[in-house]
Length: 313
Length: 290
Image (tube, rainbow over all chains, first blue to last red; front, side):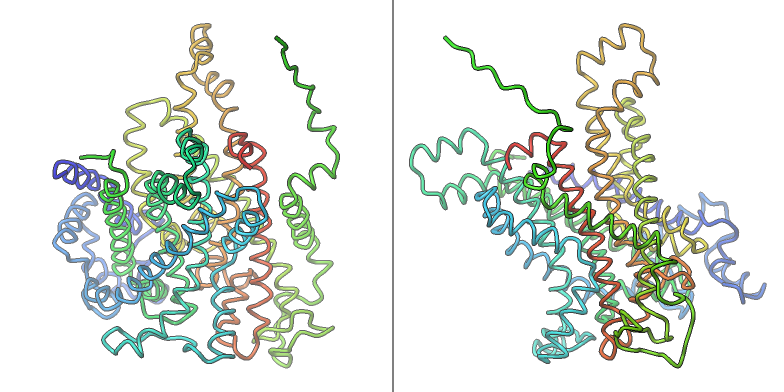
């Protein structure tokens, strides 16, 4: 087990290294002078000199990269060009809503999507399957702002159950915190549930065609037990893999949702940074969210042995 | 002992319309719906009732009526005309991204499938790109270059490439060891010819399905970029930018946000329905279980 964990940990190094190169190159792939890009149209030569100095743009590119990488490995994501605050500190201030909404969506979506997908696969071809799959493709196609604004209209403006926008940190108490995360979480959940339902159905359908399913049925096993014991257990590994892969669209969805609901999370931090051409923040946010994606997928890989006793490390 | 002889199956062309309607109703719905949206966008100059960019402060936030089918926005511009014109941008971006990412993905995937050294390097790069949430990478790419339709297409296409590469590579790996490839090789078919004549045709069916899903998600991504105030310059009406301008007045004037969102959602839905239908038709393994 320990050897496997170490091997898997080592395998994340090339992935994160590639992410680091892409994130670093973002600024240097730009046609023209990066300092002029950051400074904007109104920058004076003095401004440009200051930006070059702060980012070390005069040094050779390999040296810049290694220096930057060394800082990042020590947890230093650079300094904001706009207000001179450390990027890691800015991210720490903004990570709570993004993380909490993301985890809420994942939990909620798994609870809803897996039963829906199993039922659709079990009743494949019936009206209930067609209904679930039609709803899934609709939910999967809806833009986040349509779902978000419809929910705001119904539940915030008309029924006044939840606030229209904004966020209260957990430390403000659950009575203030909880209402603010319901609608944003629900908004992105639709898309994620649709994705997971489609994947669960396809996976369970594959399993249902296996010989051991016929055996289980032939020996008179009750259907719910067949589904729970044989079908879901064998489909579990591909399903949790999809939970991890779908995380990429989930994080992307949260970035848009934060603008719809005016939530001060990582997505808003990044968009505001782009408007101010504050590149260290942009790079930091992408790096942290990608690391989060890699980390959760690592945990999912390590969890396989829980679902499938054949997998022993 | 008797041998059952299967009745000769009718060829696809002889199947009637009612067969297609019964077998793939959602696919037909998708085709008709998308055709309607394409026609609206193509004939936007004839169908639009107002100039989509003309500002008219006297007619701010008019509710939907006969003169203003979908109402007017905070600058007094006609939402209906802007939505019709915005369809041009969305469809162009969708098709452009699908074409670009499929071409790039096909080329990289074929190389990765046939060359071990290149495979190891390319797939590591692809894994790294997949670890960055697609819309974030697109946002970052748009942020560093001058905004235009071309840069938006490129920025949205790049994050899609790894998915196409994986698909092409898996197809290439599975057919590389087939006897007919061996036979072609032994009979002296040279490498580029081998790829084009014998490998490429196998990738076409899954790629068409993939392209339709890429097209749908690209249209959404473009709308998200415009909504966030990035990407295509605000002088060009797009669904995302119309929604973005209605964002702050959504409680006063829901129509500015609602109608472009509905058009956007419907277009993406129609394309996804077409993609699902194509998948069922082209993938007999999945079609059998339905």
